[in-house]
Image (cartoon, rainbow, N blue to C red):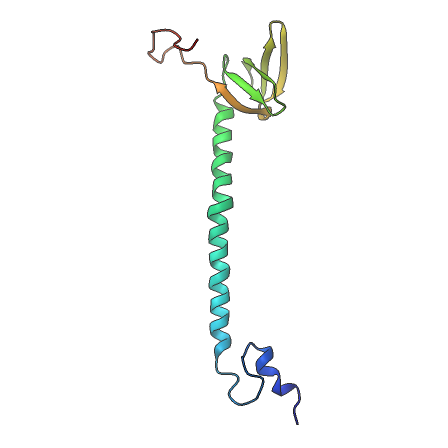
Length: 129
């Protein structure tokens, strides 16, 4: 009689459907291989996705904390301007002669040009024209 017991080795991962030596212990090695494969996928995912994202987030946080008066910045909306003042989480950007706009610090996407510190030692003047 061929019942469900003849298909049991096939259901458990064996290669033979007959009852003659189908369950030879291959299920344990398949489990280990599967776990190693999933482990490698997780490691690759970490190095390709998570780690670069964390690094980029740290750089953005550092950039936002170092914004100071006189820096040329671009906001996430595309507005270019000069930082007029910086408070805790607010930046006031001068976009024209008499036009100043208040933004959240997180709205600044990049700093185009950083104003040099007066005490940095470079007294030759502004070399960019």
